[in-house]
View 1: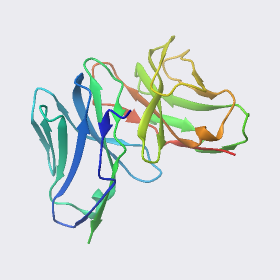
View 2: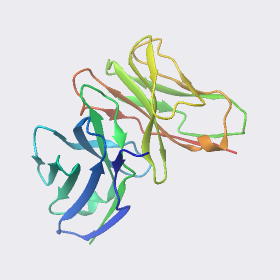
View 3: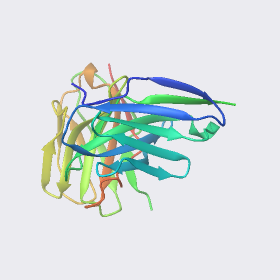
Length: 112
Length: 113
């Protein structure tokens, strides 16, 4: 049973607009959340993370929001650029643990 | 700096054959792991190691063996390949204390016919 869920398999957005990717989790022991970006034929690369003691973390065009009570996090990309077209994976790990549980991924397509 | 290197990149196996996917990292990372990626499933942890001589099972370990004789290398062995093991395999490594600094290799595409 998947403990991390990304219910939207794909997202299409116009260049310059906001992309919002959603992720839900079920394990209350998760305290660290990450987003990875993956291009075809490459390995995933780290994008941004957030600890459970925060509700927001921002890095340039990327912002992750965490709602612990709802067990929900989201990734905002503003503004979206063509190079953002990729698969985005949400991941989570429990306290003091390197093991990651991944969602199924959301394929983002940024239209010119 | 090569990072995490996986070989081979592509492999076709017949059912019942055995093979080893190689993984090496040159960053002196203690933590290494293997994931498989399947459509609609994301990445699932197969086996992991927190240091030389120490390995443990992840979420989907059946049909796979690992060993960690050195810090640098973490090979994944398929003992008797099955079509259900057709997947993309990723090796990853991380230094201690940095849970967000997990580096992935470029992947190994395996098809079992």
